[in-house]
Structure formats: structure tokens, C-alpha cells
Image (cartoon, rainbow, N blue to C red; front, side, top):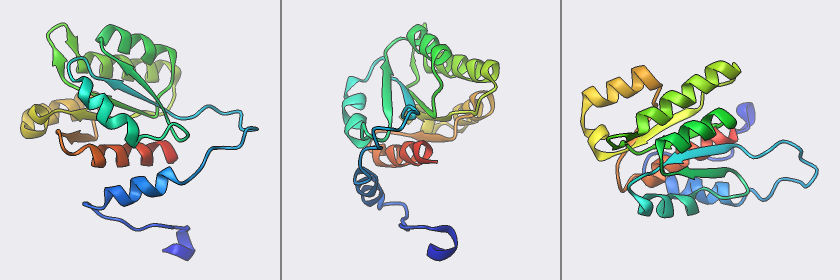
Amino acid sequence: WRAEFGVDLFTCHGREEELIQRFSTLGTPPASTTSPLPRVLVFSPNDPGFVEDLRPRLPGHIVEVDVVNSAEDGANVARERAYCACVVKLGTRGNLGKDVLKALRSAEAARGGARAFAAVHSATAAERPETRTKFEVEYGVELFVRHGEEDQLAAALLHTAMV
């Protein structure tokens, strides 16, 4: 695998910290690079601790993170910018993560661009198969995590940003 595909690291579930450490040593892109860093949109209306826990796991020289607390703000930035990934909390009535995902998918379709990786950070969603199925089918969500699984989430976001 190393020679044929240029793989530098093999890892598995439970060793996400090693993957994050490897990503954090990649360094800053050269100053002559004109393309912007990949962007991740995070919708976290009711859990500021989640953002504080996630942000250090996403090095600023690899990815830019936009955090919004309202679905309206999330929809607006999704229309204005292209994202490689989006993480949402479920939210509360009138301020829902699904509305951010819906706006993101609509903006992607209008631009004709690639679909962003989508994840939901919610114990409720992770534990309910019917909720997971709805988010997978309607919004293309690929990962469901709960509190304590932020390493897995960060590894998936960094992988998405790097490809």
C-alpha cells in the first residue's frame, strides 16, 4: 500500500489521536498558494462547549471553521461560501440543524459544486435509527456522533478537508 498508493499512515478506530497529531504536523501552506483553505461550517445553537472542544482539533492551517448559532445565519453563509464539510447540532424549534443542511444542499445544487461531507453531533440522532435514516436520505448526512466522539468527528473532517 505504501508504494502503490503513497499511504504514510495506517490507523483504525480508537487511534484517532494519532491521526490528528499527524495532521497537525503538516505545516502551513506556502505563501504563494492562491487557493483558500477548505471551510467547515458548524451549527451549534445550544452547545457552546461543543465548539470549544472541537476547534482545537481542527488546525487553522488546514481548515477554516465558520461557527453559526442560528439556522438563518447558517443558511446565509451556506449560500455565500462553498464548504467541504458541515456539522450540525439538531437545534431547537425554529432554529434547526436540518434547515442549515437543507440550505447547504440547495446552494450546492445551484452552484453545481461538490457535495459537502455532512455530520450530525447528537446523542438523540445517533440513538434513533429513524432519525438517522431521515437525515441520511434527505440531507446526505454521512456521520452521526455523540458527546465523547469528537476525535472521530475531527478525523473525518480533516480527512475531508485533505482530499
